[in-house]
Length: 83
Image 1 (tube, rainbow, N blue to C red):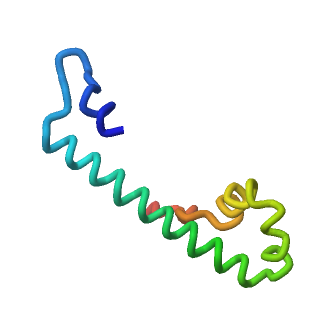
Image 2: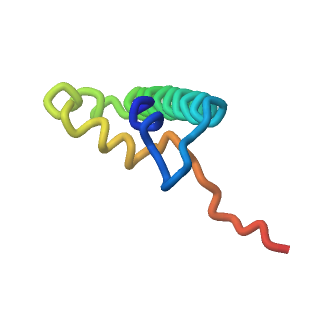
């Protein structure tokens, strides 16, 4: 992905070194945070539902997608902050 960012170009404009470092750092942190949250939230959900935990080995391929749907690693507020 970093190689693609390095080669990315708008006509006559490339990302400079500081912009590249900032983007790579942001991607690293964002990817780590969501992965940690998915694992933690998913394990909690499975520990709270022993029946689902017992079915997990036979359904491992769809488990991650279902846990993403059931307990998203990123929570967004739907509350309007309008004044």
